[in-house]
Image (cartoon, rainbow, N blue to C red; front, side):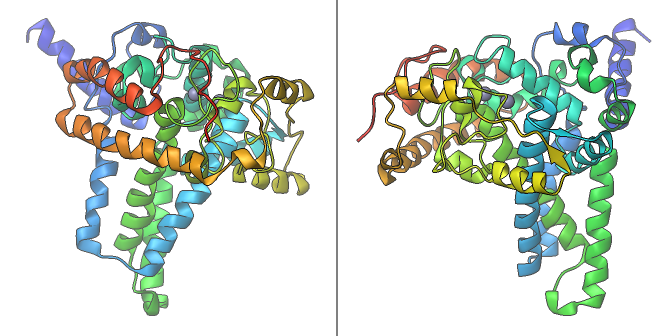
Amino acid sequence: MPASTQNVFRRLLGSLVQWIDSDYSLESPEAIRAQPDGVNLVRCLPFVILHLGCLGVLWVGGSWFAAGVAVALYFARMFFVTGIFHRYFSHKTYSTSRFGQFVLAVLTGTTVQRGALWWAYHHRHHHQHSDEPEDAHSPHVHGFLWSHIGWITSRRNFPTDYSKIRDLAKYPELVFLNRFDILVPVLFATALFVGGNYLGHAAPALHTSGAQLLVWGFFISTTALFHGTACINSLAHLMGNRRFETTDDSRNSFILSLITLGEGWHNNHHRYMSATRQGFYWWELDITYYLLKALSWTGFIWGLKEVPASIYMEAEQRHHQDTLSRFSVSSVQHEINTLRRMVPTAAVIAMATVNSPANADQLQRKDEPTISKDVTGQTQHPGASAPAPRA
Ligand SMILES: [Zn+2]
Ligand SMILES: [Zn+2]
């Protein structure tokens, strides 16, 4: 067998093993990260299956109960993404016990967004290189589609570099959950199937079944959860206001805060990432923060970090008139208009892009000027000045 064919087989086998053991690799994380971006179809096949699984609704049908479960699981797990992956593992904005930390890591497993250490590693990397070429998911550098979904399919973004997250990697139980990140999602999907089957017999008035809860509670809800989360990587650097002059193009968006339970205040967060709250003012809806605050009253977590007075002073000095009056219907209408311009463009590009590294590369060049200009109507370079106050 020629050496090149052997190499292809070795890589194929390696990708299959990685479905089970995500730390299995023939190369070091540094070597993989040094490679150019490119879609690895075999490795990300489970991700494709997750999306295709939504079509199962054609066979299992729907019920009010199954739809309710999908919505409830979307918001519960969005809290796990924002309150645990992001505000605990990535930024350590509050404390908990070692057992509590393990429980939090298990809960994040149900989100099907890989392990907590992989998530935290990539997120910290984003903050270090926001909107620079090294940033894995900047819409300004790589285009909208790559920042939203492409980067997650790229081989160079699969490994977890444990050397960069030593504060988390010192806990073997966290490394175990991160390495075998398929374990909790499989248990979660199985629980939905078994639970649905039980309810199908025990409560026939709900008109549900194991297969129906699997499709709605796992496939549909998890796919929506992924795209809701991914909006922060793509849209939160394109849509909304800039209160602080940060070195990236992060923005504050009310609409994104609604669908992500508070993560839409992304410019606030990029300015001061150590605070537990991301809505810095009372009118900036941040449901994740309210839930974490309530959880702290139980003693399960503690030491929530506040926004320092110096950051509020900085906001005032920028004459941003951060008052409720500024949060008007017209500012939300502006975000809606932005979406109206952007979503069709992104959809056309998505349909024209068939999973190919070459196409993805073209996309990075093709969609950047169109989408960025449409959205902001301003210069695109990182650190662009804040938009003029709107009426
Ligand atoms: Zn960001
Ligand atoms: Zn962050």
